[in-house]
Image (cartoon, rainbow, N blue to C red; front, side, top):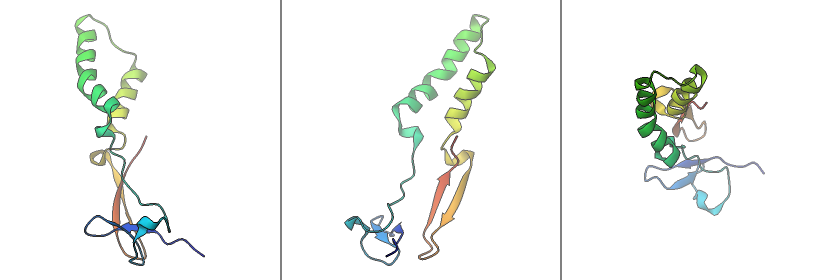
Length: 102
């Protein structure tokens, strides 16, 4: 028996591609996009990293280039505005945006 992929109906309730309710646990797991901007760590880095960098610059100091690059990459990781793929269910034609991840 093959698993039927789960999709989301127009009312955002989980549905299998064959139209049946996916909440029963049958079929593939429902895809839910990760939203890094909603995590506490992301919010802290987004809010305080620029001020931290400016504080160091005011003292004539700087983070190593590779550390700055890691912070910049972290703030772009998983965000749709920095790149994504559009994937489509072949059975029901439901579409999802999958953000590029680091």
